[in-house]
Length: 203
Image (cartoon, rainbow, N blue to C red; front, side, top):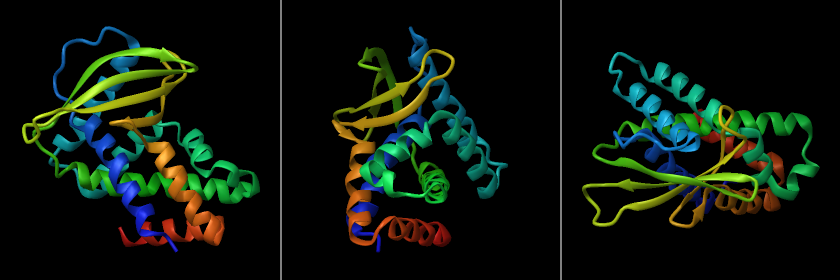
């Protein structure tokens, strides 16, 4: 059974992060390829949200393309499953990747359409270990202080993929790893897959 904490974590950190790139405003021209990657992603997300002719199914499909192309779903999935990945079958891993992607797309394509007024200000990037970190802030007219968001990228210019989003020092992949691990330790990987199937079917 999927725990309440598991669901809250997924609708918390990741929701804020995806809202951030979807609400990208019109910042000054980026000074480096990594920053330009995040800005470009935001602009494409905005074009989807702004197209009132799209049905919800069309919007979901376009957000799915954005998500699959921008995020390294396989790498994130391997990380959040942690040590439990070694005991999963290839079929379970394939299903997890699909269910994970479907869940994120359905949940946040609907959630993002409700946001208004926020903008994402890209501050620059730096190489940290084997990742490139793009620093940014979500600025809201309803909040006195901006929200700090760091985008962790793998790869190089022209082939960047997002592998983590850190909001005010809260790592998306680390939070998910803790909550997924809690579900798996109680009922196995099949329990996690069953919970995601049920959530997706109810969307």
